[in-house]
Length: 237
Ligand code: BTN
Image (cartoon, rainbow, N blue to C red; front, side, top):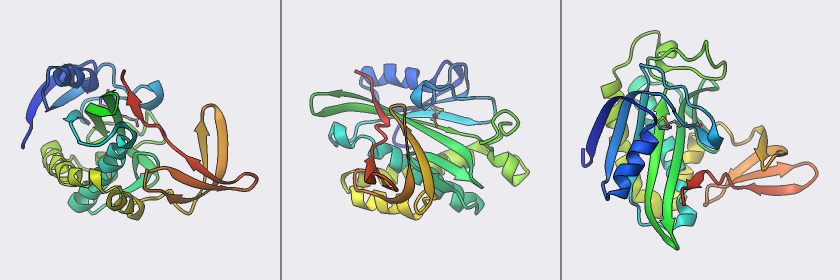
C-alpha cells in the first residue's frame, strides 16, 4: 500500500481521527474494529458492530470543490466491483452512494471535504461495510456479507483489493464521464420509479439518467425533467 495505515481497536469515528491526521498534512488510512460514534450521511448514526470494516481514507485529489462528490461515485464503484470479483455476488449501486445486494444495503459511503476558495485541501472518504457483523436483525433494509454467503469472510482479503481498486480508480477523477459510465453499469437505480427527499421536499419520478456531474435526472409526471444533486460531499468549513 502507498499509504500509512493506522489501526485501532475502537475509535469514536474514523472520520474524526482521519481529519486530525489530514490537518497535520498526512495522507493515511484509518481503520477500526468498531466505532462508538459511527457517522452516517445526513447526521445519521452508523452501526459499527464488530465484524464489519470501518475505515477512512485521506485523499488529496487535484479537482475543484464542485467535483468533490465524484469521490462518492468512485468509492461505490470500487466497492461493488471488488465484491463482485471476490464473491461473485451481484452487488449494485443505489444513487447517490449505497452499495446493495438483493436490494439491501451492504455498504455506506461518506465523504467530507476541507476546501479553501477553489482548492480542495483534502477529502476524507469513509467506507463502512457489513462483513461479518449481524445487521439484518437490527436494520431491516441492511445485510452483511456473512449473512448472504452463510460463512465468515476474511476482512483482509476484502480490504486490500478494495484499497487497490480505489487507488486505481482515482486517476479517473479527472474524467468524470468514465467514472459515471462505470457507475451506471452497476446501477440498480436507473429505469426505476424512485422517490427522493431533498430539503424536506419529496420528488417522485422515473430515474432516467446520471449526468456527468453525478446528478440524478428524474422524469416527473407534473414537473418534467428534474436534476437532483445529492450535495453529498459535506463541507467541513
Ligand atoms: C451512510 O450510508 O450513511 C454512510 C455511512 C458511512 C460509514 C463509514 S464507517 C467508516 C467511516 N466512519 C464513520 O463514522 N462513518 C464512515
